[in-house]
Image (cartoon, rainbow, N blue to C red):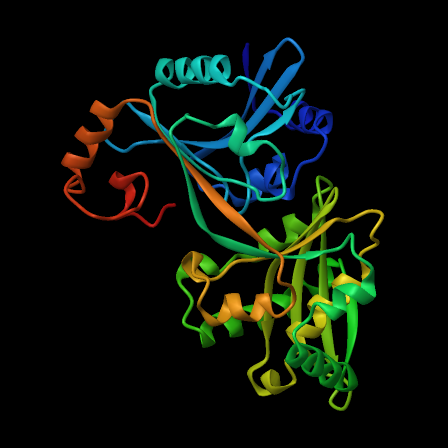
Length: 344
């Protein structure tokens, strides 16, 4: 049986029935991050004692009768309850495919979550599951001393230096949004970030106001000047902490305060509450760029990150690609007909 959930109460009530979920599965996160042409839905599948939930964003495909679906930016994918070791997903695949075809949803794309169990099992032989790099996790179940022992030596030295020069302040106050935005935007301008890496004030306000998850900002205060020189934003949901955004004032980059802020979040995370501190991956799924190397200095525990691609109507998919002059290309972008848009 399939049920489409679009209201907050039903959405969050279903999430609460699963053993765990992440910020990227919540109703509020979908509403905060969706584009104007995207409609958040939570697909609920039930069969005997098995329940599966897949959050997606439905989109109309311009100049056609068709739609497609994508996931929020982050780590989403299906949640489940009652999935046994020998679970057969054939009925789930059949029912969900029927739903997509009936409602003219011709393609589906979703980023999966490395910390949610059974996702690859649920989607086995259902479209394509492809590895898209790795993410770096600090294992919060380990003793704090062992966590730090896993740091690279150079990182330890940088954190020690930063801790002598800075004081860490924790905040979840709306009053501090402008400070964080100013630092973050300066950082994005310095690295020539694309437009989609900038956010309106309303975005940050809604993140801090949400009760579906907890948002915390850590600031580094430089002790001599008393200036706030760096900020990092984290999401805390069930057993998972996600490192979301950060920035540092250019004149204080030599103090490397972002490393201190991540370390402080690690220290403040109780091991009986949180299991994972996900630092994410490199740019464009790279494992060789400076961002991934920076994150890897905190931990050698790397988790494979997967994406899911499904085409339910190949004829319509190819036709739209042809109309958009994107059919004959070696691009790995999906869906291919959207590769010339600023949409993922």
